[in-house]
Length: 196
Image (cartoon, rainbow, N blue to C red; front, top):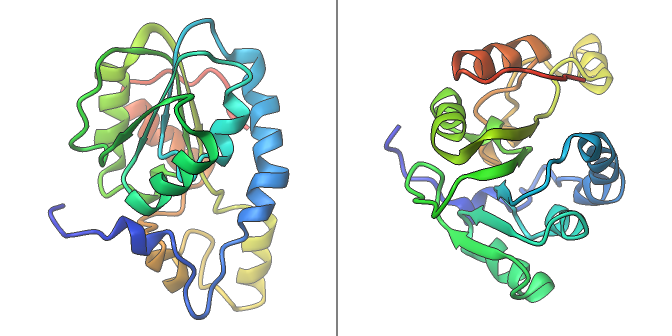
């Protein structure tokens, strides 16, 4: 898709929707690391969509060689002030980035739902960026989360996988279920070792 996207605008709260970043940072990030840690392998790490670096900070205690790719220059400015020069930071969208090497660990958390062509990105990760024995860690919001199911029952959402206007303003293109997420990863040639 060739439509212009303002990545700085997509990270901002809107007049009728505030994203709960503190919940992600204080609760979700801790549990994501706990679930990833047993599967990390020795080597380098690529974080795709590092935002302002909150999750990156948690990764610093596991990896010495981290490269982050982020499209929002506003997020990058916060990232630099928080993390400094501890990681290699590349400002680019994924479709255009040229990476210097392959990576043993690749992390993509709460990003795939923002991608215009998610299967193409997953193929690029699998065929160009992931090392031969590398591990890919993928997290997306779950369409079947209890909160969404309750919202459907209350009539606030038409169905679990709907992309709400507020989500669309934040750049969401899809709301995944476990089966649709696994479908896209398999189409991209990735082997699913664990899902939860």
